[in-house]
Length: 258
Length: 327
Image 1 (spheres, helix red, strand yellow):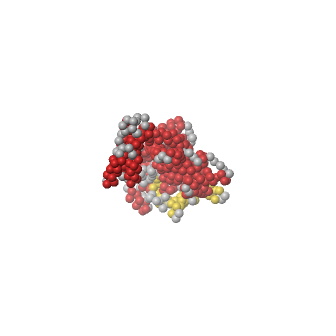
Image 2: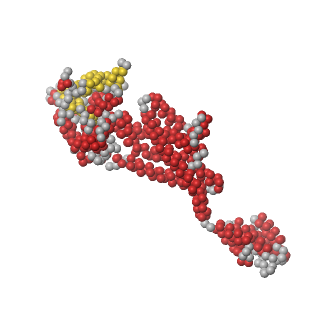
Image 3: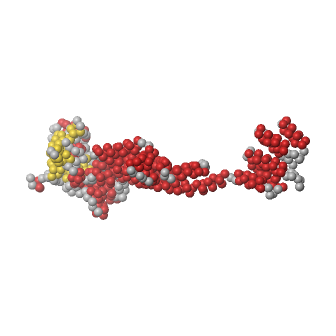
């Protein structure tokens, strides 16, 4: 396999169990560089768990993760599979940006402080450089005027755009969005979508878990329908959302949402 | 009344020369509790004319003065004494008695003030030592508490077990006993510590245990998403704790930690038992020397002033620590 054709992310047989429940059931997935992948599916289908497994926020029981061709996250120690060293795990997370449903901004830091934090603490860049990176990215998400306020004063949409900026400040090679608009008032969804759209247009590789079908249709190169820890169907938006969709589960799910 | 009448009769019958009988009778009346009767008899002794023996007059008036004074009728007592001084200005007995009586008439606050001025320097010295102990403990115990809290949260079993034990032991035994053990007990193991070092170690360990549980609670109260968000941008556990989690606990820590430090100010009184002269010990010494309750009241006032200042400071810090939450 040559470098050009190599997928940025390759998942093989990813399995995550919570006690009795198998949340993710032997998933295989390849994501090409620059690809925009949208995962849809009912609540509890394992979408978020799969996403969190990719940047190792969940420890998986089985399977391998390859990022840029390297196997990441787990090593064999005396024949037993275990999590890689904390430094290696942190290093991977630094290359993959993650945006959460509930933003999880750092409330004790200003907007600028939140966006600077990654470059400053993780990449150990000088404060001046971190500040200029953060300033530039805040301008990109349209929040330059909010740089010196604390997150408590922001609207939900603004908070999520700061969260996106915080992830982007690390210059990630890939972005994971875990239901980025689900906690937002409907009138605030648009501004977050626009921000993600801009990012997509710039060629960022991204996996988005969302319940907004319109957004999935507009943005995705590929859509995956997930249920009970399995991929039930995958294809282009036209294939999945089109009239030709003959899977009743998917039709039912889409009809309930639309 | 009949008795009084009889006495008056006898007095007049005997004439003005022999007053011995009169004095005896008035003494008897005093013993019986009839002070008014005794006074009436004593006043029968007339003022002497020039050249006459004055001793009976002086004795009767002085005795009347003592009776008035015992009834707290200080102004009447002074009046009879001044009757004597009018005729005999040089009578030192009357003069001293008047001076003592006038002293009693001086307002109470005057003596309280002089007590305060006498005790204050000693108590202030004690208070400085109390504050020094408080500051040393305030320096040591948050660090100890943080270590114990992080230890308790550690996934490394022996570490969390040791920290659990420290909290269990130091919260579960009286501070007084710990101080005794450190100061009186350790020398038998070959470790002799000065009272001050013993006090700081005892208070430090005790308060580390309490603060440890408070800090652990505060860390665990921070929403889990904060740790995840920190990890998601590539932070290590230590970086996430230092930069994200612990700074957010400050506001939540202030009310319980303020409480603990106010309790600490008062708990320092316990170190008076291991030969430390701090505020409590100083007050106790003053009280035992002068048997004057002002020393204790004053110490209470100083403790109140200290705790009030601390309360005020901690309210300010709490407000500052949570400034990012204000919209």
